[in-house]
Length: 450
Image (spheres, one colour):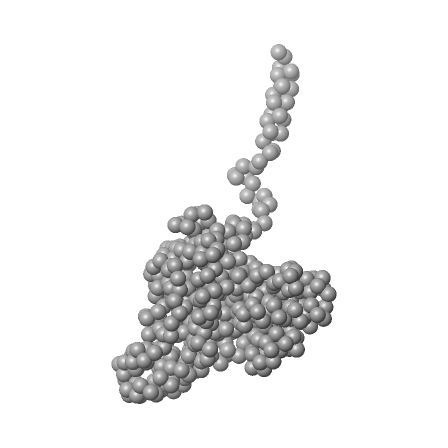
C-alpha cells in the first residue's frame, strides 16, 4: 500500500471513529452541555391504593431524608411568599410548613398522595383559608402564644398525619374531609356537643353503630380501616419521618397505639372521675379553685364547647387536654383517640359519598362534587333527610338536570325551603344544616367552573 493510500485510510478511520463518538458526550470536556429541566419525582401509586398484605401496608421508597428534604424545600419555596412576620409565633410557622408539604412527604416516602375534586382548593389555598378565619385569629393564635394554655404541637402532628392517611385510604377528597373536621370541631379532639357527639368528627352513638355494621357487613371496608391504622403506626415509628419533622422544628412523641379493635365503643367520658382528675391537676399547679368540684365541672363544660377560658381559669384547658389524652387518647378504639376518630369519620364520609340514593325506585347518579355535598348533609343529619331533600328537588327539576348538576349549582343544594321540607320544619336543624353545608363548601372549594 502506498503512503498516500495509507494516509487516506487513516483519515477515513479517524472520521468514522469521530462519528461514532458523537452519540453521547463524555463528562470531561462537556461541562457546558444543556442540563435537563428539574422536575419533581413522580412516584405515587393510584389514589386509594390498598396493599395486599395487611401486616405491612406501608410501601417505602428508597429516598433518603436528605433527598426528600431537598424536594420539599424547593416545593415550599416555590409558592410560599409569606415572610416570617406573617406568622405570630414559631409553632404556627412550623404548622404552616407541615400542612403545605406533608402531602409531598407522604408521596415521596410512601407513594401515597391525597386526592382533590375539580374546583377544590389546593393545599396552599386551604391553609390560607384557615389562616384568614376568625377561629385562627381569636383561638389558635392566643392558644399557641400564651404558655398558660400549653399548646401541643404533637397533637397537631397527629391530626395532620391521621387526616391525610384517612383521606388517602378511604379515597375521599382531602379538602372535603379537612373542612368537615374543621367545621365539626375546629380540630379540638376533646370537644363534646350538646347532642353528645364527641371528638374531631363529632361521632355520635348512632354513627358508631353504623360504622360497626359497615365493618361487619363489608370485609373490604374493614380491611381498609385496618390497613390505614397500620400505616399510621408505621409512620409514627419511621425514622425518616422523624428526621424530617425534627428538621422542620418539631419534636414528635407519638403514642404506641396498639391493635385496632373489632368494635368501637361509645361512652360518656366526662363524668366525675375526669372532674376529680382535672381538679387534682389544678391543685398541683397551685390553683386553689381546683378544690371546688362544682366550679371545675362548669369550667370543663365551657371548655368542651370550644370557649377560650381566660385569666386564672385558662389552666383548665391544658389540664383537661392532658387528662383526656391520658385516659382515652393513647390507644386505638375510643372516639376521643385522634387517630380512631379521623379513621371512622373518613369511613362514614366515604359510605355516604358512595351511597345509593334511590327515589321512587330509581337510583340518582350524582356528580362527585354534588355527591360530596350530599354526603356532608347525610353525615350531619342522616341519610333519610338527604333522601327527602332529593325527592323535593325531583319535584321541581328534571332528573337529568340534577344528575348533571355540580356543587356550584347553589340553587339546588342550598335551598332552605327544600331543607325545611326534608327536616319537617324543625327550624333549629334547618339553619344548622344550611350553615353546615355552606361553610364546608366555602372552605373546600374555589371559584372555578367545572
